[in-house]
Length: 92
Length: 434
Image 1 (cartoon, each protein chain N blue to C red):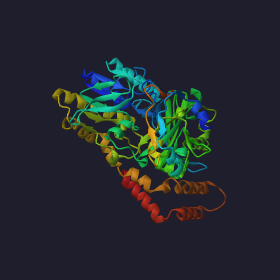
Image 2: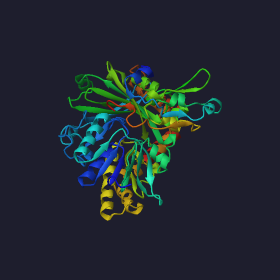
Image 3: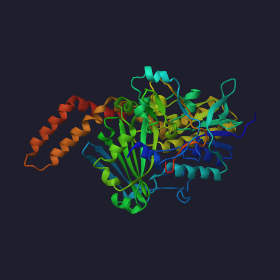
Image 4: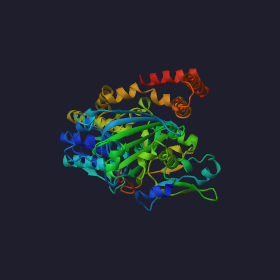
């Protein structure tokens, strides 16, 4: 089962304001060789564009926090979605 | 600005709600702030909860329609290789009868909601959809309230209880607890797999309301310091797999691929066969143990539950520590209110009482355990396969005498893990849990 299908099982109340942001995009391009966000994130929020930039699909974020402390450059501005937004567990 | 209430609690999980219930029982005005749309909507655990500790908050929980999934009557531990593994199970009738509901499974979206409703009936105000963004302090640094993401969202109180879970932005932001090191948290992913109630009872050999818990070690975590779990719910199974976050990064594992692989393991696949995935979740577990528990009190505040890293990784106990630490925090606050003293000195009674309780006693007993796992990766990579190969050889009936089989098994195990290393693992394992 692909990750896209897994996320399709979940309910999200998506805010138009992203709660995740890469602070300095150049840092990812030039200084981050490992880019662990690409595989650490359980929701595959982070993907690499053709030009090497990291795309952030915050809409499917499961709010675990792993990218925040897993980013070797501490380059992710991580907030909780605003009150009531984000993932909404059915069973938990 | 004036005080809105006596106590503000951040987070409507087991720690926060336990505290709120005890405070309300003693007439203390309490507000619980929850960032989710409803209590439990952001929460996840493997899925077991402990009746003894819940009963200290809500004595008649079973009669109050507590959303119990299944009462655990059998605990299994598996030590897996790629193609199979060892299984150890213990079942006891006492858990069906006299000690019924000592351990049971729950879905946290349902349980936490129910628990918060119990607090509401006692007079607690639970406000959902509200993120606490900062703590308010006076000139001396004493915590005097919280700031939320609502308009005019500042609330003052005598005491603030931080029960906001392991992924606490507040702790990191305010410096009450440092941001956890990837080595000190485990990332777990969970899938809820729907199956008919009767199918589950048959497959796990249990009565309709009873269930089984399985903790799964070995090659399923692909060399990571981690564990898999399979728990029975009423009409679903909870399949969880997780590992140390540092190991995830080191081995470049993708959590969603790990759980897909886990589902195909020969001991797991038949149990989940025909099941329909219903939900996919991810959450951290505190894994630092005793040495990484932060200071849990200060002027005007206390920390309880996962937010204080109170988790026993060996015995998968966290929700009980959350409930009990919440209860002790509430009792400390009640005393502080009687004395009108909310200083660090007055609230420090909390730390002493935790120390005298099973919480810090257990964490202290196992303080070396997280380090033991970190330093002996053989347990997760080489040993599962070589021990399985030994069993496979011994159980294959092929005309070879047992002494030959025994000596070649030993040789094979020792070729990967030296005798000295094996002894060291056994000795250090014993030392880490003695």
